Each structure stands twice: as structure tokens, then as C-alpha cells.
Amino acid sequence: MPAGDFALVDSNIFINHLANQSADCTNFFCRVARREVEAHITTAIIAEILHQRMMAEAVAKGLISPGQTVKKLEANPTVIPQLTDHIVGGLSARRMLTFY
Image (tube, rainbow, N blue to C red; front, side, top):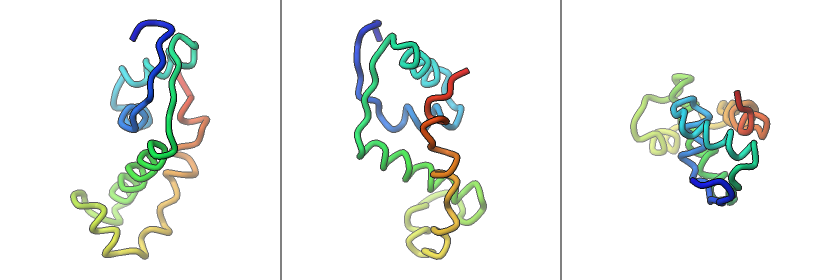
């Protein structure tokens, strides 16, 4: 992406960055932090990021097994109140915009 451009950032870019799964995604946010490019995000994208992180948290904590996570959470709603890491630490503005 050329310097000076702007982009609507898809949830997958955030998810891959937050999970340390993509150097390209992290490099993109570094460019945003240096103001080389301008990034935009919608509330719908934020909701998708939180949703994906919550499902990953449920699997990581062993509360449900991988695969069909939404159906498993719907079948076990008592699990949902135990899922707070995606909000408390996983998606804070500081974490989203921390670059190394």
C-alpha cells in the first residue's frame, strides 16, 4: 500500500496481528502508527473481532472443543460469563496499537 493511502481494515488483519500470526499485519499497523497510511474501522468490524476472540478464548480455556464453536456456546450458555480475556486484555486499545 503506497504511503498516504487509507484503508478500511478488515477484522482478520486485527485478529492475525493480535494472535501474532502475521508479520505483514503487524507491519501494517506499524505503518499506521508511523502515520504512513491511514486506517479506519467500523463498529461492525470491532464486533467481529470481539466475537472471534471470544470463541478462541473459549477453546483456549478448554471450555469447548474446536469446531462449531458458536453452536457449542449456544448449547452451553453458562460458559459465556467465564469469557472475559478477549475484552479485559485481548482487545484493549493499548494491545491493538502496541508495536515492537
